[in-house]
Image (cartoon, rainbow, N blue to C red; front, side, top):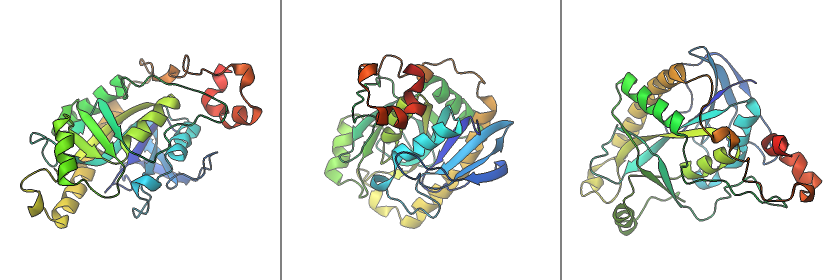
Length: 285
């Protein structure tokens, strides 16, 4: 095991200076290359792997992300918990810019994503009623409080395809559905993390109000970038607190998510699929 905790850095967060004794590792997966090299290091006495979701320099758009490779890479490194750091727009007046939301639900409004490792002779249906790890989510929320960052526990993150932002009609519709924040990445990661039996939690950093807000047009790109940078600095402090407080052992059910999810008769699984999926389902075969 090279790491136990994974950090996915979103928009505005492409490295973490809080990591010590760092090294970089490139990983190839059955699904191709991850977004970038993984930065391995130590934080609070724990081994951590950091990955810039969009690549350093922000080169990859949401729909272009190789989500499967990113999550599989964490699994290959030995990671058991993943904290996702993501920039989002607010869909409610009470969720203000520079505040963090720790969502406990997702709504998948994407259209072109592959959000499973399985298929090609292997049918798997995970439970996804509770899409984030409750243990990890509480740890992240507690870390926000310890770091002095205003955060709210719970809420729904709607994930859209992008890369364009919403129309006013779409934004108003999402608000009428009761959505809290809007982004373009996290639900796909969460599904794959569950299939990989990794704990997953989202730290959604509000940069601005979405287009529904009457003052949206007064927000400049410079202001949004400024908020991104402030949020990224706060997120780093929260991650430090979360890593230090994280229990050594998992008491959740994430580590056995596939135990009753593999529907295919084991004898009918193609040899090529067995080999490709060994890291994910080998213990059940």
